[in-house]
Length: 211
Image 1 (cartoon, rainbow, N blue to C red):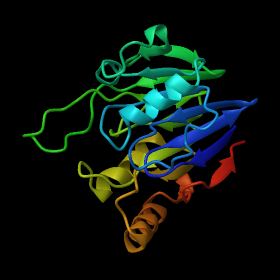
Image 2 (image 1 turned 90 degrees about the horizontal axis):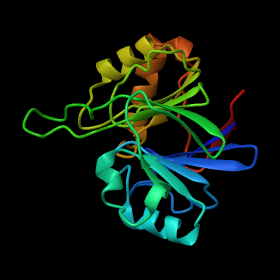
Image 3 (image 1 turned 45 degrees about the vertical axis):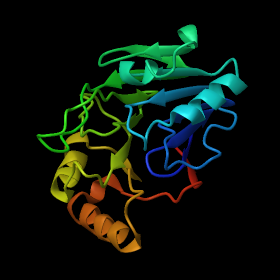
């Protein structure tokens, strides 16, 4: 499997000629959905879900399918079973990838801000994209896509989350609001406390092959 960071919260996974894209939102590289066979969207916030981008992709490729939470699906009517609603505990196959859904709610931003649905995805039993939550998947995962920075998080929680999941490797996710200094600070903190996670940040467009 090859994993490519596509900016902020989006990744492309490629295997056996198939492409699965997770969370192509408003801070995502324009090429993220090129050649995609399937899409997963964790929740409805703009940095994870961009309605017009997905409409263009669905209209341009009649074979493309999307799995997501109900709030996103309701914004994309007219596509029939090409847009499927999933939630915690569901399992399905998307473009040849085996996917498990984990989690139900977005992390708390502020008590005055209503919480929305958020479902993370474990792909092929090895890669976990939690969306905007610190959901522990309840199963081992080799690769954690770690939301390092958000209005709803603080560094100590992010670092402890790595320790709870215990991945073999962690790649930075949800980092689009950080500048170079902030990225370096997070890297030093995570490496100091959770060195066994081999934390790394991929630049937009950079990819790695996962064993």
